[in-house]
Length: 175
Image (cartoon, rainbow, N blue to C red):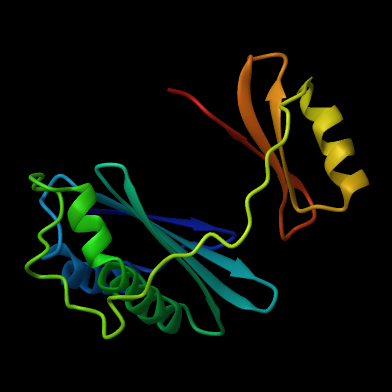
């Protein structure tokens, strides 16, 4: 696995980079060599945040951890990623049947592997063509954290969302 390490408001030391690479090597046994992991170390007012993402043939494993120490963040990220792989092992085996991207023999079985995912509410709504700005206004009027709409500029389904920093994000779809 190739691990790409970046920093935001922080320049990770060589020791921290080596630690991240060493810790991610533990996850390497779950994947083929073609998988890339991205790790971003962010310095915040109250400490550090580490965001890690692994894309394995369309299945994305992601962990985000905040702590006072970046090394603690890395350890907890690895724990979260391992836990995700264990919890969803059966479902991922069905999705990736016959593919070599994930080595399921190496993924440990989660104790509650039979847990079912239940959709408790369904909602249908009409996609109304609008601009991103109009979608943000609509989201704020509804007092929601996100809003799905048909972007009239790109003619595709998009999602606007409110970020933790009180700014807005836009998810654009493609196929």
